[in-house]
Image 1 (cartoon, one colour):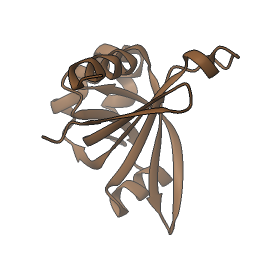
Image 2: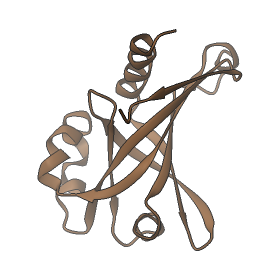
Image 3: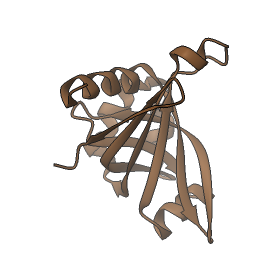
Length: 146
């Protein structure tokens, strides 16, 4: 499979899903969180928000390296044959809300009050690569850092 086809599959997965699992690191241990997200069209950026008074926020300010898992599971037996998951690896930074909030709210309009709250921070993952796994064993890599 070429990179254009792989980008298309990952793009469709990211646009079809609303939630992802964010893995951060802090206090000498990994930590995972469920987050609402939106990806840029070129797949090089993923945006998510969090309240500043969370362990997640503290971890993100301690260590910028993160990963995010986005999958299409339905929690049914068919997932073993038709399920796919993409892991995005990259570094995270807080961004001005005006930069990405509009894009974020197109996917998550119900989170408008949350995003506009002064206690909420909006983050961008600068994605370096994706790993796409299908059928629990087929692994493909897409480098988007170039």
